[in-house]
Image (cartoon, rainbow, N blue to C red):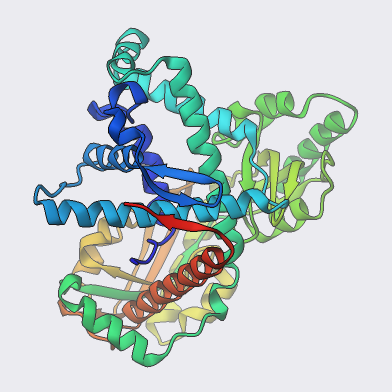
Length: 445
């Protein structure tokens, strides 16, 4: 039996069921299939059955994503077997998630996702009439397609929450050096060539607002917080006052998040609030936040916030520019970037980066050109750029420039990725073995 694919496969499947519309493919209904296929059961998993037609639907979805489907009978049979094994694994996990009382589907989130997908597909077809016609050609109505999407997004939530709980144990999974080497040898040909790569340390200097500017922003945040505590609608206050463009129009809603996804101060406040409790102003590098927790579930909260940002003045920017020049001067005479970052730098930014040359354009403007021509030990900067609508200054020290060539296990980044892949597969194998031992599974295809 082939092993169930890692968790990312299921997310791709769910996307495929939706993305299929944009390219002319739709999941087939019973009316669009040969009933001899529909009535054939490929596998029984617990109290659910997987039909041959569902496997064919998945093949349609892969085609819609641009995947080349083999024509040879043996290769096609192997693909169907792989897909069935994946579907059995998915069904095992979903059934286990349904039995876990701590895993709860957020129906509001499901409805929002369905609405967004319908809106996007309507736009893809340049209007609802054309969209309905495309649905009808595959035996769907808009109502039945909405219900199909609801089922897909509910299953996606169940799957992701279940795997997220299990992933907490990932670090405890041991990986032997022999396993890393075996994996590397098996995948050596598929790895291709390592692109030229530059490794550099950085100190990012961010202008900090003056004490008087911060005091004014905090006073405004306290005023708005008092309005919320006295009973004014939090979402409406967010729409009126919040300076976070990403959440303002949705009433400050940030969705579900776990620890490690927000800044430390924000997380500490949010995870210590009771449902519907409103925090005092919380200061982060973004400004002052008023936080309201809307819902809680295992290891996650869903919260809204109102952000009052604290903008640096031109004098603050000029002071930061002088600090950046000071950092460069000290690095040029041999001071280590680490202590300088602690004193002058933005601690939210990574201290060291390892970037292939072909991805340098993804860095802030002004970084790529000097790094492409850099040598080990070179000090670059200050480079002035804008991020989060604020000027910043980057001072870089080139640690190493690695030539392109075949990957080797001397590459620590590659070793870490291989180790992570093995840990993930071991975790999936362990989960599948446990679930199969507790659930009736019969393959009929």
